[in-house]
Image (tube, rainbow over all chains, first blue to last red):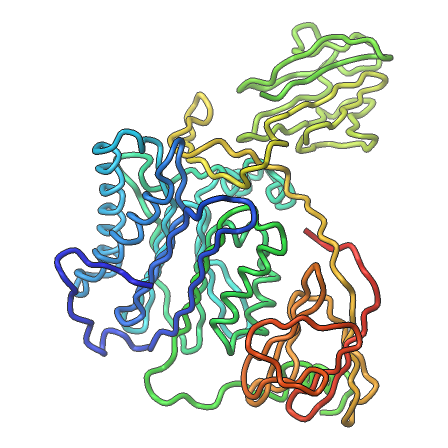
Length: 285
Length: 227
């Protein structure tokens, strides 16, 4: 995925800034119902950041808002290598919001455009996760899936307040109401979280076109089986969402943190896959 | 805009639009929808607005609130639902929710005291998320080796086959059948031939060889599956 930087390409960070080498696989798909892809995906594995956005518009400009968001964010982070990640992420989200607001002022036909934005920025042995809206970040660690973001959605607020059950939320017609997004107002407050990275973690960023149709259990199943092949995992997640209707654009970014030094052999292969399953089932081990 | 149409014994009693407010149903004077029968509780049920949804709540009524024949204490209304209170029927009509030709749309809202104020985006025109996808049912039978004869169900979307550190592939369950792809190591063989990279459709009875072990795919039937 190509990314352009305002004012030329900043130098790549010193290796010390990235304790892990990042393996990145990304897909953005139209889905089976929509006519345009209004998601945007941007990755920069060398500098250690990835972002995706799900654009929306009253009239037009959903794709414009999404692209402005990811490109502004990635450009900002590229010039902020020496700033504390949280401060940099905050500034980058503000800049992306401003860029969208300014574009609307220049072209009133774009009024009512906005976008979600979710980003992960790897520094040293930590990752900073920032988001507004309902595009999610998950982490796959040692065989378990964990959601690292809380949707800024009406349904999430209803769940938190005990006004809706999980089943009601899943069936709700309100599940596409977003309570926070870029472009909507002059100020935007991203949720920021910092997490320690462990070797072989996989971070998953996705738009609601994926997580609305592929639930956490199926996401975990896909990662468990396909994790050795990140690219196949990304394309297969898109296939799963399309097989379940593909009602929205589907975007996903998978990032694996690989130790820079030679890795030790991973796992005990005998206990995994069908052979392991059979052996455990038949008491052969 | 969603609408409620009340009737009793086939006779229309009236219709009400649900705007951005709570609708009360009961025998009490001042109920939005007044059902005049001694067996109806004074405050029998209510409908609350939740985003673009409408939630029916039974207010601990003596004789209960039913939707499409089932007693409910709370229920997220879907287009076409019939609310039954004794022999009263209230039909819920929400045409907007069945126009889903554009797929799922997202809209940005701000919560205020006056309700939700749209800021950007387009109102969702989304069906309730209850799509039943028919999926095939098959099992993998081990043909060779010391586990010959054993079978493995293929109910999950993905099933790994082989040994991860050596030759490893995956079977994907899709509405149109099962597919196989190499994940790591040497490509698996299907009916004796190594497969190209990416998902390859498997026929019923296909033999699969992975890292020296041999399997056979057997279809059992078509099953309804989850959304």
